[in-house]
Image (cartoon, rainbow, N blue to C red; front, side, top):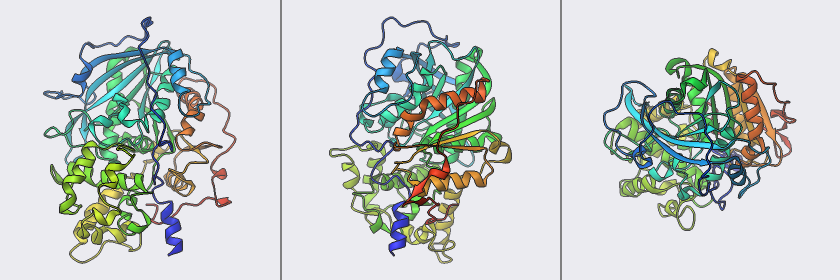
Length: 500
């Protein structure tokens, strides 16, 4: 039992803290827009919609994936303002940015991760630099980390509601534009026009659902500024956004993005086995809500949003106790990372452990298999339910094809990360290496889950330039996967649950 508890202690990594290991940090408000906005790269379509309209009913959807439905001009932030933002709240040791950011918000057409596929739409933030890093730029798509699935949680809004995770997000995306790239930042389908008929919430870690929104984001950026872009596509993500970026990479051959996948860079990606979110039900005592907040919130978001997307409206609550379904829906619709007073109060109101919210029929069906205590699903009447969720867990950590694996892939991780600890980032590395990925690992000493972004943003910017613009490759990081230690020893993947 002691060994099981130790291994489960590293289970999801997102236990108690979230994307930034920074529960008290505030978001970085860009402040008053600069009234002396210089001329940046021109948007090559009409862009005169209101910001509110980006999140409203899109009307009849266009046929083309990535087609722009609406476009609104947002504020300009100078390089000086960006550097002030980047230095706020938590450490930022990467070099200063030299470009201001011309921001737009768009709504574009995508496809949902249903079977068969259905049409969808995603809101997004678009950031363009004062002076592009080159005459022609790659398409850069940046994927946000965990924020919650609610409408206020949309990353493009940078709402103070998500004060706990805004700093990590802003350091990831504003450094990219500040170093001279044009950046598409999808919210993912489901956030805009939240709750409307035919528009289920974004399915947390659904590889198809988030991957398609990401790849269609690349198409959308190409429609906005075609004259500025090459055919190369770069995917960047942090934490859950690392999962999103890798999922999009795994879909690239089959779904495409009207270009060529040139590079993938992820900060502390949660590229773990998705059965982790069902494994919590097997040992609820190891994961009390108080102390394992992130793990339990993600488990709720994963199962509820998959039910809504794949089983139909109103079925997100099927795996939960009937008496808790309304409260679970309210949590998904209204709660973000750390939300409530005190933080996570809305989670604590649901109960104390997974036993208090999940229906025993679901726990009995999936718990032992998900944790790896049983080799497969039960053969009794609970077997079909287990098989359904087993298939979903496996589909949500897709393998990269041989072609996709050839694309240069950079994984960055901070050696004080407690959100994706050594035993879990090693699982991600093992899985990528098992797929034959052209992987480079960069370990940043003395920084945590969010700190790795502030420490290595300039390295990522230079690495992208080397992969896409013919620039000199930055010097290799001083530490790599051989520096990932646990209890004084080289870390190995914790295989409860199995690393499939």
